Amino acid sequence: MPLRFSLFLLLAALGGAAITVQAGLNAQVARTLGHPLWATMVSLVVSIISILPLLVAFRVGPPHLGSLADTPWWIWVGGALGAFFITVALMTAPELGAVVFISAVVMGQSIASLTLDQFAIAGFPSRPVTLLRIAGALLVVAGVLLSAWAAQAATKQRASIAVSESKT
Image 1 (tube, rainbow, N blue to C red):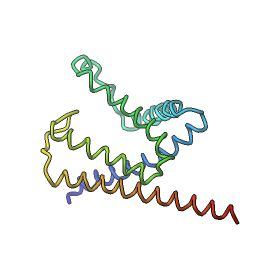
Image 2: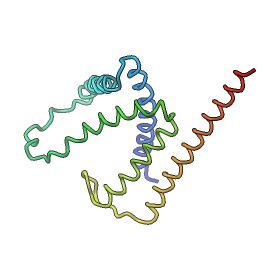
Image 3: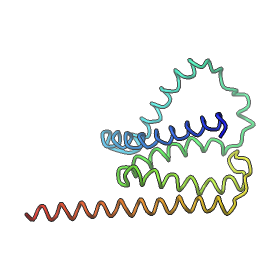
Image 4: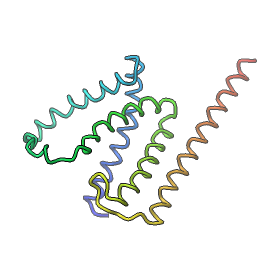
């Protein structure tokens, strides 16, 4: 595997780990502030504050504002989708648990990615859907169902133990 590809794979894995932790932390912020939307707002503000020193450190020049008029309207939906994801994550992660939450996220990403690749949507190059790629997505779905089933079984077992201990 080429080094560049391996580094990008590692960075993507680190990003995946980060969103797992982010969901749990943002859920705590939501409980503290009293509503998930306030936690989403705080997360986005902290994101802006966090990126500013990087812009300075990497000496990133000003954005090319002149080209904004030539961009399609739908590219701005990405920001709204980020806010949607943050809100959904902080609401669902504590209920599902980290493994089921992230598995479900990867399932949604896998299914959406097949469509994005097949039809070259959102700036992705066209990559045809193949039987192997569909099989991979189905394995992800199976993994989510297995993880969810195991989590539910563990929850029922803990509840059963708690009930039997309270009777003694």
